Image (tube, rainbow, N blue to C red):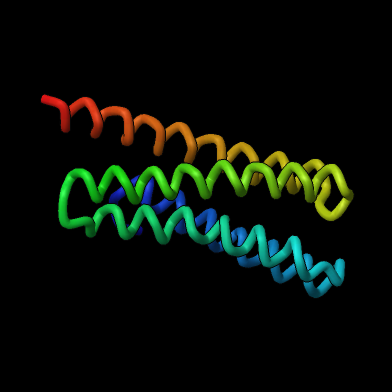
Length: 119
């Protein structure tokens, strides 16, 4: 735990994404979608971590915007995996809810950071 809620949530989500990708490959023999969800789902936390190490407020906001976009992309892949039967509704609901929380937090941080930047 890092004592930073967004870092903790995005890291936890990345771990679940890795496990989901492993499940898709091992159990469902699905290789293309598993790589897509792996890339976007782990990128959220990586870009959030980069944002915190950013060299300026502008860099911070830029990296968080990338994290937000990756979260939106992950939302798409999760919906596709559910609707094509690769994951169950329960698996989807759990990840989708967690992702929704991450999106809300990222959006709020970006919005407040932009407001503070303009002051």
